[in-house]
Length: 309
Image (cartoon, rainbow, N blue to C red):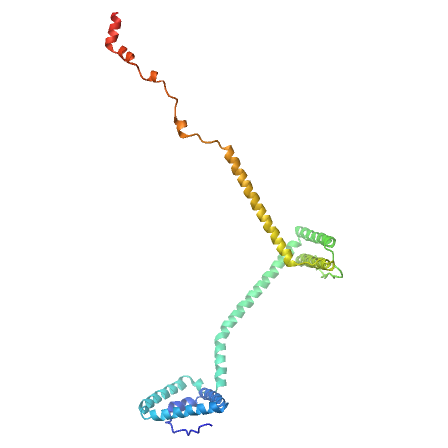
């Protein structure tokens, strides 16, 4: 059961009245009040709880009012003065929310529009320049292809395309009731560059279409003959074969390196020891060292004796 609470008399604040006089604040308070009323009336328990909270807040405000009357009056006067100054400087706040939104939108567009126009102007100029360059390049290409050498190039391209089409018809014929899209190619005399581009493009399109059509036809033939083509198994086997080939190649490379090292080891002579290389044959000790008799003969006394005899 909801508790009936009589709203006690509260002091009227001038700032609150001025703020509520603003259309934007009034609309916001109205929206919040409507939401609060809807939530409060959703259930009796919510209504009782919120009513009790309101009564407590009113009681607390009435109790504190005598003690905060002077500061509250001073603050109220300051806030009211601020609101008056805001209304004087920004008259737009006194308008309705729709008017405020529209005015703000126009102001933003007026600020952004020059920059957006500059971007679009630059984009248009760039597109025109690219288009003019494209036309100029196309005209130059046509001028080159109309010369004698250009005509030879065009005829070579046509001959090559015809030969390639014959090869495609021989090795990759049209499968089943496949219809080749025959786009009309512009004559060489009208536009040589466009004729060349269309010829090459048609050949590429036909080749791609023939490849995929023949591949699908072969796969269907294998399936009809009872051979199930498992792409995963095929890829796994292919990877295993590549890995085996890599391992075999590495092993062969290692064996070649070992054989080369063994050949180099057998071909290089063994280095001689330092002692044998530096040693010289021993000299005769008899010739190198003189005897006692030879020493005596070489003295002056022995020489004088020999002359007297």
